[in-house]
Length: 422
Image (cartoon, rainbow, N blue to C red; front, top):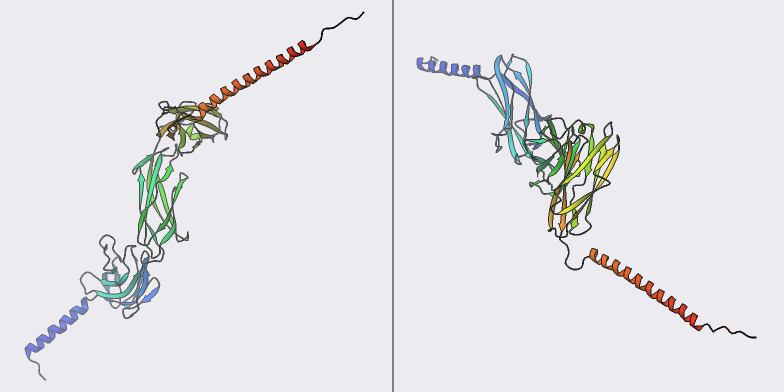
């Protein structure tokens, strides 16, 4: 059969197009794909079940059907709402292949905690610079973990840097990303290098709900070395069997109050709880413990400011304390309110100085002043009772003396006159 010239030309063009397309196809084929160690296939009807918040380790085995260059393998999951900000994807560096050689490529994809529970496709694309790409898809199912609490934010106050010797306040925001409600969540913040930590508990947190902890108080040591430190936040849940942690940088600035004496590790301990003080009453006691952890004896001076307007103070045994190495001394601070002091919360400052006059620490104390009760006060009543008792004793003594004298006089009058007989 003889072909017409036009038909023959058209056949040649089609064959050339087929040959060109084949020549520009990426010269590899996918032999197998594993996700977290499990084989997956495009023909399987069963989906691979995965849990959000975990990593996907994708292993791809390739066979080169020809020579090729500048090839890359990309794996991704579409449909995640925040894919632009937090994409579920990974890609290999470009590589060359030689015909007949087998290649293993590994990719890692992160399933975000915010990924919705649903069905997805894992798509794998193999392409070079200008050839036809090879695409294969694998069915996945993303589930929600039974127990999962995420740390959403850690807020510091002050937020930029904290001066040594002052307080760092930390609040932690958490969200229950699991299926089950959580009870007894423990939140702990710490700076291990400085040896300080604080904890808080959240009694209950429902699924898909968020909450913020109470302010956690960390006092930075007075003579902490200036620099950057790691603040570690740990959240324990699921009856303590599960935990999640994060770190945040904290900058510590030097304190002007830190002296060479303070570097000898003077430890000052005082309760920060407010005391109840009644106007005109006996007052309250604040124990202050000073531990000389240094290698030489030290003398400390305590001063109190902020009480004169509404009350008075007294330090016992003295406002000057001498402590030998490793010795612990306790000073009792007595605070009383004036009879006319108005009710309300009062704050005052106790300064602890070394023998050179350097301030080692300033302690902020609080007192809750209660107004004097109306009517006759117990203190005044006691004085009147004491005076009345003394007067009664004197009166009884006078009466007893009069009775004794009366009896003596009566006996003298009753004695008969003596007679003489001859």
